[in-house]
Image (cartoon, rainbow, N blue to C red):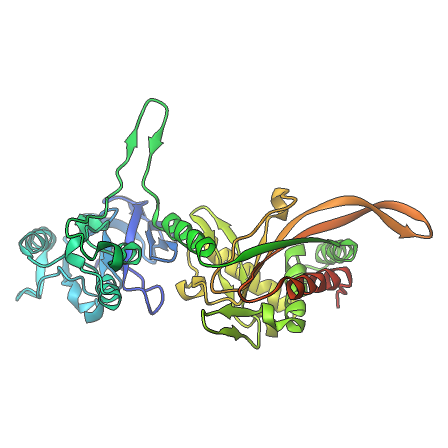
Length: 419
């Protein structure tokens, strides 16, 4: 009997996902663990691995389709197996059904060809605006007239991203407004491609951050001899004992940042317009570079973890982002209270990180550079220093407290003790 492949539900707020690429085609052999397709929510991108073995009998949604969560997207079975299937309404919650899906047919089982034909006919005959449930709810909350929008989803469906970028004030009297659909064009020496969903999210967030906050960056450097000695000690112990947990410099720096935040809780806050919300524990955001783009997962309750637990949590969050299995709720900008962005491995000597609003601070960690410094007793030599760049929202924190907080991070690093 054929195995159903469904669209996973990534978080409570996700109602639909967009299939971006199929890695297997109809008729291909499939093994357990093979990546079948990639898909995107409005927060992140993921890969879906097969849990069944056999032949990919049928693909129900092509690339670019916006699919309700828990909907059937494909079938895996034996070669030559005749395919019949249950209608998708049995697998899709009512709240996740697309606006253009027609009422259930009287027959419980139909052939695949008939199902596709009926589905296409229903969409053509539908007189309502094609819009996902989430987008419809957002439009109602923002007071946006969906009849004047052109969606960028499959078959012109209006999706959440369209509502998020539409302005009711701008288009209130513009009944001819149509949101342009990006097209791939090419010339003799260039190719234009539409932005991926993840890249749209990143660009929108970065622009909104710079437009809606008063950002200022202070730079400082810290002597990292103690951190480097601790790192070498850990590496040696890991080589001698396979059960010894490895700790990276980034793990140690994040640990030092948390200790500094405990002394300067005003930096562990969200700026909410008319109020500042200061948190009692640290939910640490970690900037992760992935093939799909920048992701910033939150390690919840990082302030309550010992160093080994923090290291495991940071590595797990980064691996989940790169694999595409991170929980979308952990990528929400308000899931973390403070973010660390480490570009030291790339050799970056100084940079200005952008705030992940509503957070009021973000720390940029730079590369290590040997600088001349006093070694005591009128002796000078080269000392390894690591660059620290703190961007803060001047609406929430003044320059003096921000500098003291950055200096406390420096102090924690220079007095780090591996215990």
